Amino acid sequence: MEFLSFGTILKEQASLVLVGVYTDTITASLVKREEGKTVFISTATEPQEGEAFSNGVLDIERIALNCRKALSALPHTPGNAPHDVVFALGGGIGEFSFMREKGVREAKEKKITAEEVAALVGAHTQGNDKEVARSFAESFHIDGFAVADPIGLNGSEILIDIVRMACADGFAQSLSHVASSAGLSMKGFLDMRYAAAKHAKFFEEAQGSAIVLCIFEHETYAVLVRDRAVAGGGVARAGYGIMIEAIEKTFFVGREEAKGIMRAFTNKELDEHTSARIREACGVAGKALVADIAQTVSQLDPTSLLPGNIRVVSAGEMPQIDEAFRAPEWLASLPIERNATVQVWHAPEHDTGGTAFDVLIAESL
Image (cartoon, rainbow, N blue to C red):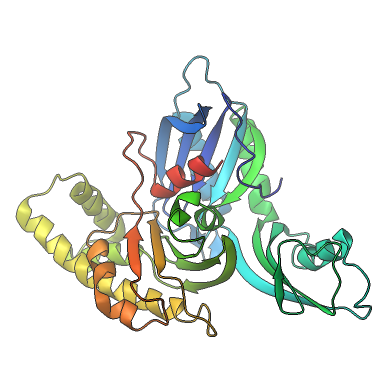
């Protein structure tokens, strides 16, 4: 079991099951590659009632049970029976971090080897048998100069930007058992935040640079991307769950009932008076969330202007969040390029019932 590289997982005419693991829901999607595009054949969703944590520890048994439920509810059509399953981990489930590793070389005239680079990158991956982890090198600098590949070059100092992904070994083993019990072969893991940072559509008109905001239930990850390489990261301890909390307070209900109200609002099942109260409550909550995110974004790079291409992806419903991000006040507080734009990425319309991250990841397989 390992974390996989994007772009190499799903071959033409092949199919697999993609399981999205979130703190508040599990999604299972049967996807297939057709004519260079990923097609959703079917999706099943299993809500995770309550919290994904028990006394601050990830509730592995509950998550595994809900994964089994989602997989058992996933309809398999004839001729599309997959053999592989990939688990995509969201915020609060898997670890995602950015670091900058520096290596000082005594023999600066000696050429840099692949083994030397691998040792620097792997220093943050190995040595912990309680985790399944992998590190990816994003960019390199030798003596202050950016290079595409350091191998074969020389210098006194090498600097490597590294992204690390990990999950608990016990959690990985549990999901492996889930896969085998469903008659599937465990192919590996993906990280949703890394998928967003590498999503090509976010950089089509931005020369490869962006700030990608990944919003989950209780956390928002801000990922700085320069020249299509991750160059920084930070976490705001607030997510779309703030919208649920706003509904709880507005209607004096518990969390699960508030989630039900949110679903009814999203499906346009409520009267206009109730919908207006939700929009008002979520508007205030959205401004608070954006303010927390702005603080995190402002600390991504203290030495340079931040790119003005800001992309937002959310795993949950966020009424009024577009308006909160369009407000000019939060951008005015940031060390950012002029004429910055914010785009809340909405998944293309499809009838599978998955999240925006499910679609984004499927397109990156």
